[in-house]
Image (cartoon, rainbow, N blue to C red; front, top):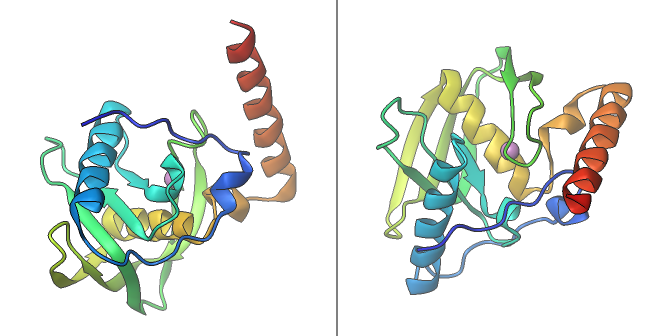
Length: 170
Ligand code: NI
């Protein structure tokens, strides 16, 4: 297992559209293990393959308090989204230190393959629904700050670029 570097907004690679996973083979299983390790290490509740510069439809999530209930979604598809929507504060490992409100469907139904390649269906609401929608956006090349106003987004972009320059200088 290995920790993977996480791309930081506004890295243009975060806007790549992911392709479906062809086979849940040894390479994908190793990627899942590395992504889980990376997510736990960074104290995140979700990580999309896009964020580690792998452009295949794969996300890992764990919203449990004990950090011991990993959820692996490969080739996820939303089959139903509730018409009622909710605003909640989101953050992202690719946009460290930024939290802001995003409106999403309050409940969803999803089909996906699990980490063993078995087909599964799940229903999600609350924070899990938010997290799945956020991670699936990454697979489409979308970062949550794109839902914010252009003014806020530009401020965030400037802040991230400044932080990057400071890291590079250090
Ligand atoms: Ni994110």
